[in-house]
Image (spheres, rainbow, N blue to C red):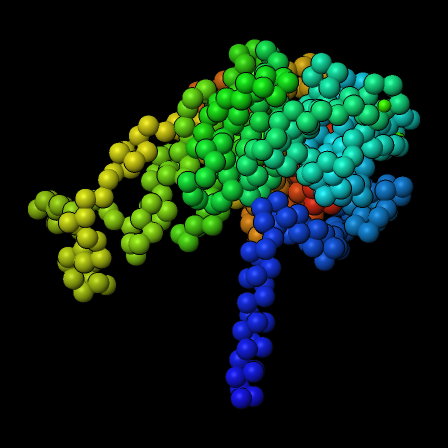
Length: 460
Ligand SMILES: [Ca+2]
Ligand SMILES: [Ca+2]
């Protein structure tokens, strides 16, 4: 009797995390993972020695004013960045900072998902430390993407879009319209939001799962609307999680980073940079990489993925090849050659190929495009792309940096712009968005430490 009771207690104990896991859906998992981590972890482990100050300009010193639970005065952090760039801790203690946009008033606006707010940030005395963060819009459900258009600040929220405006000039919005509702909610990050040059509104809708055919075809897509939220169009699909996207000002081409599957038993697959065009399908959940069929997803009942190839050896091949003696057989016993498994070409041939592959779990997020002369020549007409790292903060040696690429290049190559938030396989920040602030200035949102960094080109 006592034993039975003990087993019951044990069963409840084992199952309770599972029950909790099931009860916490989509967005909440993302939120809880992050906030727990921030509380647990102090940056002590990667605080470099002071003598690093001698080495280069690539350090960031925490100003005394910005001391909080995470950063202490005079802490030093090393960032690797191009010559003549300097990065400052601009604001911190902000919570789960998500995306950034420059307002029509020249101030920086940012969304805080866990606080349901959009704040307005200004540095009045120009000392590269923000002086005021004032709420512009509050009581929002998981605000993420932001962009101004025609006097309205558009904000993507859980399942839709609201737009707000300040009518009386007190720097807080009092007018609010919910213009889009009922969109499916994705598993991880929220929706990115931008306007094209024709004032059409585009919204990325992340998938609700790692790999599945979603109940709602708008999951795993980019949607287009008129600026009042009408005229919904499924612009492109087969995109698991578009964390950020951006239009090229000249051609209007839409470039996006896409987070690929992370939960495959055989391991995660490369994230992607895609050129998103109307009506096209980008492969998820059927295919990944350069149109490789995801056989683990497509044929889950098979222990080993079917391979439609029977090795044929010629006498010339045999002469050069040592037989595989480890299996004790010359037959390919594990492969069912009678299976008529369709080829990758058949399964994936109609899907759009990515323009570039990114490391697995690098977590592409916010994007910015550089075409103004306050930045140096080597950045001109290039995209900046934030690689935020994996959503669940699992150990990785990729992500946690900002990279750069030339969308006009025949072969799109990705190079580092700023890195250093990752030290070994541990990170002290998680960049999620980047925007131009004018005059050779960039702002970077860090969702991990709840901070905004200001990056300044010092040789204008
Ligand atoms: Ca200041
Ligand atoms: Ca107002």
